[in-house]
Image (cartoon, rainbow, N blue to C red; front, side, top):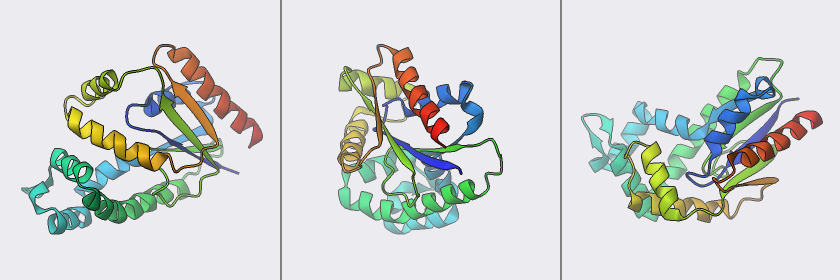
Length: 204
C-alpha cells in the first residue's frame, strides 16, 4: 500500500534539496514527488484564480497577469488578506494533489512525498509528517541564500514576514520525524533523511 509523507518546513530549510538527493539515490525509484508550492504557483495562471485575485486584490492584476511580488507583499503584510487567499487557494491545491495521487500507476512507488512550506492547510491524508528545520545559521545569511536562489524575486522584508507566518503555523503541526539542517554538514543532513525514508520503505 502506498504511503503519503508530508515533508514540510520554513522557507529555505532545505526541503527541495533533500528531496532531490533522495530521488537520485537507489531508493528514488520507490518515491514519487509532488510539490504543493509549485502547484500553487501554476494555479496563478488559471482563470478562476485570476478572477478571485482581481475581485479581492485588484492592484495585483495587470494585463491579465498576476504580479507575484505584489501578491507576496499583500499576503505577508496583511494577515486578513493572507487568510482570505489561503481559504480560497488551499482547497484548489489539495484537489490538484489528490488528483495527482490518484493517477499514480507505477507499481514500484511505495511512498509519495508531498512537499510544502505549510502542510496542515492542505486536505491530504498523510501517513507521516517529516519536519525539516535549520540550525546554526543566521537568519540574515539564510535570507541572503534564498534571495540568491530566487534570483532576487524576493526581498528581506518579504522573507521575514513569510518566515514568521510559516513558523507560526508549523509550530502547531505534530510531526512524526524531524531533521535539522545546519548547512555545515550536508552529508549528515542527507544521511539522516535517507535513513528515515529507507526505514519507512522497509515498513511499507
